[in-house]
Length: 342
Ligand code: MG
View 1: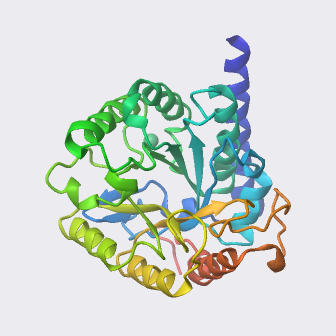
View 2: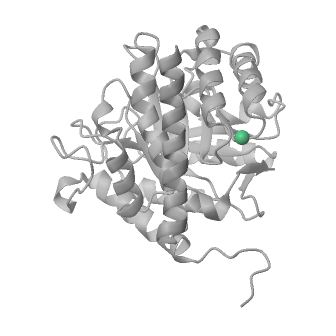
């Protein structure tokens, strides 16, 4: 027990040191220096100073199946070369994940969380499950630990439930689950942004309109795979946003909803336009070299970044180009301190 406490204290001290080193030794400003603590206002995400925030970045793959990519060098490459402003640590829960090996899975995702904090990126702690509401106690224990450890960092966003299936009810199953987990998070972290999944693989966002969760800093997950989910899902999203709900595209793909086949740049572009219009933040699925269309990497590439263009898939090239195109101007603009003289 004592060892664990010491280890966690050392990790926290290292992260704090790295943050100070980056700020004062390099003079560089990160996206988190720019925006600080995030909060929801109506359907928008705002920075600490009140700017409208749109984050764009990458989701890692299920932690139990692609743990090799969960490392600080990979995070650094995604920040420096891909210009990500956010990454998502997708901790597998069932299927040999957290419920089977809690310490191992936590250790895996914490490599990404700690690296994102040290490098000034936003990071989503994603409870990657399709059935989390059937075991809320496990989620309560997990998020209590995460909120205690990371709640003071503005970098951290909690995603309570990746994608509920179509069967559960929003009001009877999913909302009570979210309230239970949220109550525990708020004991330790009163203010960081929380994302809650919605029914049918995080698509039925309009069902929340009649029965929202009462927390001032919550957004609802909208997930799409561009080849499968088209105009009707944009209409569903628009309806929710026009009623004042905030949405967060914590997972999106350029292909078929299965993650494989039908790479569709044309439909993906329509979604990029839609997300820019509504200032929706997004993470692409996924940092992974599995042989399937949604992967951004070809099989067998390095797990620590330094990827050449020919090592990226067609989806990887499209996403990297979009990230560089849209995030670079923002990262190049200097952060102004309030009251700074010209
Ligand atoms: Mg906090």
